[in-house]
Length: 457
Image (tube, rainbow, N blue to C red):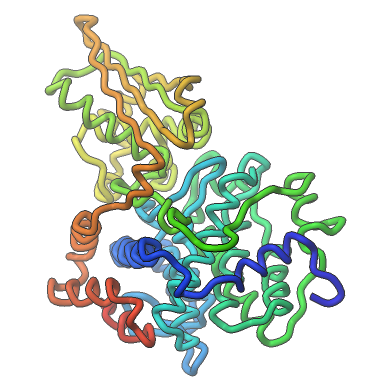
């Protein structure tokens, strides 16, 4: 990068150029296809969501080679706009895969942007899978050790740079061009954690895809020769000094690749709530069985520190006024599971977070940080709920989830069942079967257009 490429930029660019599809472990290739299937399902299920309709209306319709399909339609827009619209479809229900260690991220926020770029470029399925590996790996490794969230910065800071490098690799950019793409994606697009603080708005589901949008556009600009700010990370006003006050530390793969990699490590969700509310719902459902219809006079929940910080601490999470706040609320997630025996997208469409029976359960609830639970994260997560009855009898349920369990992967039959459950309102069974089959054989696809055409509603 003329005149200089700082050390962080060099590391990221070198990683983006280091591997070929043939270097990826078979389990990681399978994981990429699983996450595309999952993203297609949750995306199509949100086809008519309010923010998606707004964004789809605002996206310009274009023709020509640099265009990508708006999922579910015949319409095409620019790939960066497709990254935002289709990405928000995937993110809206809060049912797409997530990764939580030191920080939290949704690496699949970038997935529709990479698909859009691959479609516009005429890339193969193998090239898309390699790009997904690059994007997921950068996001997950930053999430492990770089405390952007605690410093007040949101997930798209990392997502934008991962998208720029992954798309740049599909474009065939050289090291200097990739460095400019990286700089153009991250320096102009720092975003704060206010997106996920207090009462949450529609933008909660758009922020990550907007980072992907910036990454796709940054790669396009670099391909055309636009230069970005030099010393993007380590300059006097670079990313490290402005965000953390010191250099961030992260570790990327080197040498022979071995699973688990980022694509293997994200948690494919069962419920449409934030990652740290998945286990509390499992625990609440176990407790509900033990209660057998009896109403608790009080509820005491034990959780770990980072879950409490993100899903409990804000007062708005105890009386959500919006869908976006409710699906980030541990108290609501637990109360809805206890009241209804399930938490689905209909839970939110029916505004259960405003109903008196659910709010009554929340009012009888206390959530505390368990120091032992906190010490065991992120390798092992726990949730414990104690219900006290009017008779003063205590009923207890406790559930745990290990990172190693997530890395084993969700069984294909479970993924396929989720896919069909979410898409049956929009696609007939033969079309669903054809789309799923096309995704499972992604590595044999020469182009993405036939697969994307199968998503048409």
